[in-house]
Image 1 (cartoon, rainbow, N blue to C red):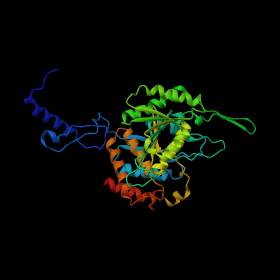
Image 2 (image 1 turned 135 degrees about the horizontal axis):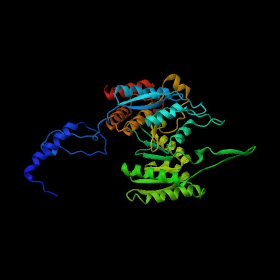
Image 3 (image 1 turned 180 degrees about the vertical axis):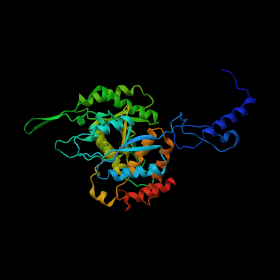
Image 4 (image 1 turned 60 degrees about the vertical axis):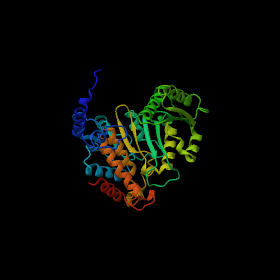
Amino acid sequence: MAKLRASSLPRQWSQLRSAYQVLGGQSSHPQIASPDLHCLDGQRKRSITYMPRPGDGTPRAVTLLPGDGIGPLVTGAVVQVMKAMHAPVYFETYEVSGKMDKVPQEVIDSIRKNKVCLKGGLATPVGGGVSSLNVQLRKELDLFASLVHCFNLPGLKTRHDNVNIVVIRENTEGEYSGLEHEVVPGVVESLKVITKFCSERIAKYAFEYAYLNGRKTVTAVHKANIMKLADGLFLESCREIAKNYPSVKYNEVIVDNCCMQLVSKPQQFDVMVTPNLYGTLVANTAAGIAGGTGVMPGGNVGAEHAIFEQGASAGNVGNEKLVLQKTANPTAILLSSAMLLRHLKFPAFADKLEQAVMGVIAEGKYRTKDLGGLSTTQEVVDAVLEKLDV
């Protein structure tokens, strides 16, 4: 390798600085490093988020499913904010209700084409013969990983501080497979399906997430002391995958003990990987600890497609009072939209949106009732738009 002569250094630094000035811009994204140009000649530091390829800035189509109840209200907030900040996305909107027997084929086709979707809550009737459209979407598009990020928002007081948990849940099998039938009148059999393929796939996703995001620990949640074959297979798969990630610590916790530990000392958890049913319980518990379902973002992802939505339970979807008074909390879906923007490789827009939402929460002037305030959805949106300075 040729040695660089000292006399050539000033010209080299000048060329480097010029290149970064052409690329320009600043970002708060922590995963991208850039040279500190202060140490070169005292000029202002410049950083870049990433080097875009030609065409990366082309606006992307996003399938939008407003959903039921408060869904149209909070997804409407996202549309407002995206338009105001000139985000490089546009929406293809389809009216879908949880009362439908199945997801319309045109909706599936749109998500397959666009690869990404933003969804409001879809109400699923309790009992009866109507299957969940949420489960249908996950199976049809093989959205095998659900990710919910439960963390303390600056300025929002909760019972526990320093909570920063990512719950990664297997999305396509387990008790959610919907394999049940009536054996004889009065006797129902429901099957729990666990496969090595799906268990290894979700474990690998959890470890990759931890590794790429600088997380230290992955905890597998199980009930293998009772369900020795099904949850035993899930644990065996997690242990096997863990061997490939020596920089990430791996441990295990029984699901009932996990719930107790979550409400007593949630700071001990980092990334959690779970089978389907346990995951929805753990994610909602963690969300409640960190501020409630109205502020927790999330998404469902597969190899080809992704759907972003409120991270924890959408139990407030059918709250008619929230709909009539227009007081639903848009925070969760706005933060999920920031996840969507980062997924589409628009990190500067994602950072800007996240910072605006966090700023409104921290300020505390505009909050909906679930966060102790009296603001309407639109008042919160207007405050976010003011923070965006648009």
